[in-house]
Amino acid sequence: MLTVFGSAALDTIRTPKKTLKGVLGGAAVFAAISASNFTKTGMIAAVGRDFPKRYHNILSKRLDLQGMTVAGNKTFCYDGIYDKTLSTRKTLKTVLNVLEKFKPKVPEEYKKSKFIYLANNDPKQNTTLLKEFDNVKFSMCDTIDFWISTKQKAVIKMIGSVDAVVINDEEAKILTKEHNLVKCAKKMMDWGARYVIIKKGEHGSLMFFEDVVFPSPGFSLDDVLDPTGAGDSFAGAMIGYLAKKNSTKMSEIKKAIVYGNVVGSFAVEGYGLDGLLRLKQSDISKRVRLYERMVRF
Ligand code: AMP
Image (tube, rainbow, N blue to C red):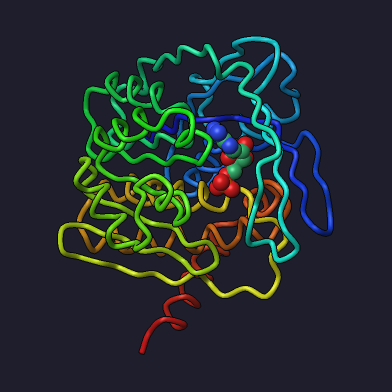
């Protein structure tokens, strides 16, 4: 079983063609739904009493929700706007609401999880929560500029407590104060992460482990609607695949990264969670075969 911990959100997403208000989002939600294509996934998250029942129903069809609690009146809210190329997003508002004082609890059944994903969330909560698992084989975390600017020390401590960090290129640069991605990765490895995966949006990702570097291009698409949650979908598919294989062999880690890129590419083809919710297993395997053809030479 895989456990995902992080934010569940009501998002406002402003794209050049469409604005979505109060839609289901959050890093843990994207990651857990993505991972559920591969393995049984439990999600630990807090929502408010304002969290719509229909969103709860969407989640309960795909996830184990023993770890989801109503912890106050208002759900975490994120508001972001994309530029006209959809490649840069500016955060307009981050309102923590229930996340501010949330004391997450790990359900007994989840404590045996060997694979843990600490999605974008308060880094202190993430580090504390990880200690509650007895049998961890592979743990991975992500973060975002908001936490880097408000709790940088805690972010560095979190990176030191997990096996792997997935982070986007801009955030890696801000966090490590380096311009070169190889230097960024080395610094995060010095802080304690054994694997560093740097996401580069439409350009794919770079994975670093000891002296191995594994670049994986993004799946080329001509129609992107909404990149929100692509990074979380990437990470969810990656760790979901590893949990399914119960393996951390380098060959499986590389395949997991390809699945991450492929599932991430579906996420950006729809608004909000739509791309992931309409996804079928056969779509994933078909696109993985296309991807293989695309990169083989
Ligand atoms: P991504 O596009 O991969 O960066 O993920 C966007 C998702 O992360 C959105 O659904 C947001 O609700 C969530 N998110 C944005 N900012 C934060 C934050 N500071 N903490 C936790 N989750 C966040």
